[in-house]
Length: 451
Image 1: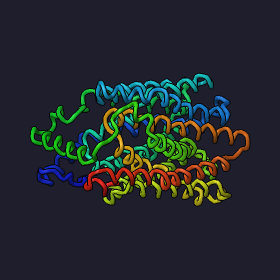
Image 2 (image 1 turned 180 degrees about the horizontal axis):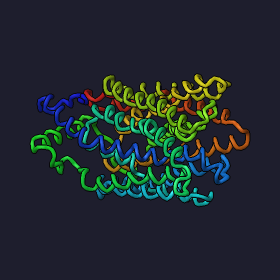
Image 3 (image 1 turned 90 degrees about the vertical axis):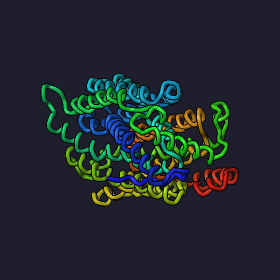
Image 4 (image 1 turned 135 degrees about the vertical axis):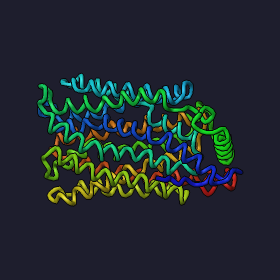
């Protein structure tokens, strides 16, 4: 399989440089995708466990919502320190540490039989996973220039949707066939069996990943030099960017991006943590069937992420791609809040568009802040956007859980999520477009078309 990444425009022969980026892609992206698939499976498998554990443990929807969402509080507390640590010790040690830690906590979730323990372990899961996603985003900027990143980000981030493709049927099968085996409930087997592979791959990462181009023994000396020259060319073409950690904290652009990402994650987390419940309320009671439906819907999300990345690289207009995805997702959530739940096909179709819109916006979103920040500012900025933005992941499951406990329905919550998503699109159009255009005016001419 060939992954055609746009040419970088150095003095090297384009074919040679493309071949080098192919080698980099196949060396780094598959293992990072596997880890991100496992991260999301371990993060959202609680949405499937909910279908058994709530009745068995007598948890309310509010308890589930708080436990699902408190994961993101752990993220908030530890994400910036984790990304700054990556700057000092490198991606290899950081990613391995994160993967091993979250895998162990996932396995311990099998013992979350009280609300207090449930909350504690979900918080720790977020604390250990904190830094993985922004760390990978930062890591990939060290290996791919700007004009190649949207596609690479899109392919990597499609792992989120692929986790649903794989995780849905896997969860349904484990919970259906192992329920009661050795006196252990299906939801407990789910946590045990899905946490173990993450620990093993985390150990493998310690030997496999390479921190920087200069240490890439799997490239020839010529390839390393050409790659370094192309990355330096890209950095120079972007012009002067913010490097200071202290100054980036005072940069209003950072906080506008954070607000937009918060609203996108509200949609994202709603699809992830309430998807199985939405499908069940559409009339599907069998857990294995729900798993397969989530798998099929997740394929739409995966396709949307890859397509958006391809189009953003081709058109060099990530802002338009991001706005379009968010609008599709927001309108679909509004549709889910309407009285269509009596029609299973309409409900599943609306959920598919909601998930595709929410997931598809993420890879192209990250192209925008990466154009404005570099160095320590990029490491801290990406972590700040992701950690504070991920508070939307706390608000969405917890808020919907409270509403469902009070009203018996998630309709009002889904309507709110849709409106918030459309608000994010409006902010992108009115605010982000303006300062991205201002930035373009201050950059070298060869960089302007990329905005």
